Image 1 (cartoon, rainbow, N blue to C red):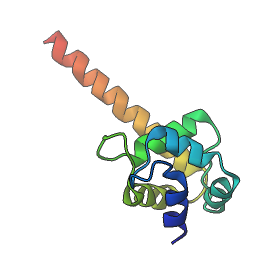
Image 2 (image 1 turned 90 degrees about the vertical axis):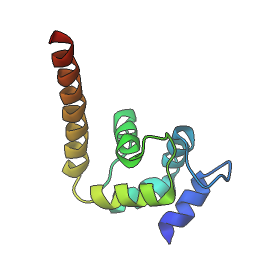
Image 3 (image 1 turned 30 degrees about the vertical axis):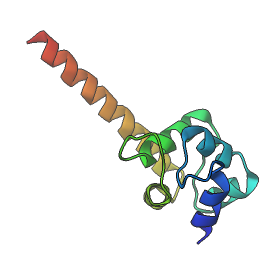
Length: 107
């Protein structure tokens, strides 16, 4: 319920999705920050915002549906170390992809 209300608040163009700019703008509002903080999620730094975005945008279409955002937040809520682990996991995945590409070019 609250997620839907906050999502609609952030969806400034009314298309039913959030682009990255709408997402960043939504996270600037105190009510959203308090709500995230109540679930032990911290999205104050640019790196944390970008990490949350990448984690939530499962299909890579650069748009977030309310379902994508809800699933991401439910998986990440909890102690702040969960978001840190998510960021670390993303970095490991990116490095693994790069190593795989380097291996392919060396063959």
